[in-house]
Every structure is written in structure tokens, then in C-alpha cells.
Length: 129
Image (cartoon, rainbow, N blue to C red):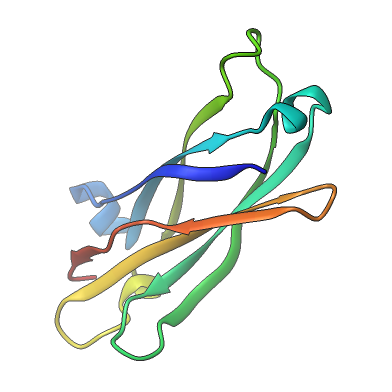
């Protein structure tokens, strides 16, 4: 069964981004495929949910963002990990989820064509959007 590891999130806002009222979301993960996943060249659809971190229930800011496919296929069968880094832009207003400092994280979910699912959550990034 596949799993996700090395989840990372960076939020970047240059002066140009501030003028355009956008934020660059950069995230990464490693999909660790099982030998069965590799043998069957299993395809995973990966997407992210943007969450506002809260004490009781996280705010769901945007769901199923940046969907893409990853195939468990490696040149060398002993290499079972596929590392990805992706990015997209969002409205600054979307990340403005609290009064004062905003706490943003991503829930990354990978769903195989067989229905197998694995997911993980990045660390929290704090900022004022």
C-alpha cells in the first residue's frame, strides 16, 4: 500500500504578488509506492485541500486544488519513491482566514484507480494575508 511522506508547504508573496493580491503556494511530497503498485503501474490522482488551522475544526478554504496524476513506475524496481514539487497561485483573500495571523496548511490526498487512498497534512505556515 502506498503512503505519503516528506510533506512540505511554502507560501511566498513577493512585492509583485502583493500588488496583484496573490500568494504563490509551493508544496511537495514523496509518494512511496509498494512493489505491487509498481508492478501494476498504479496511477494515483493527487490533489490538495487548503485548510485554515484552528483549535477545534479546521476551516476548509479550498478543496481538490491542483489535481494531477502520478504513476507508480520507476526505472529501478528498488526505487519505490516518487518525489514531487508543485506550485500554484491563489488569491490573497482566500488565505485571510483569521483576524491577525493566519495559519495555513495543506491536506494532500492520493487516490489510486483501485480506490486505495493515502493522505497526509503539511506543517502549518503562519502569515498575515
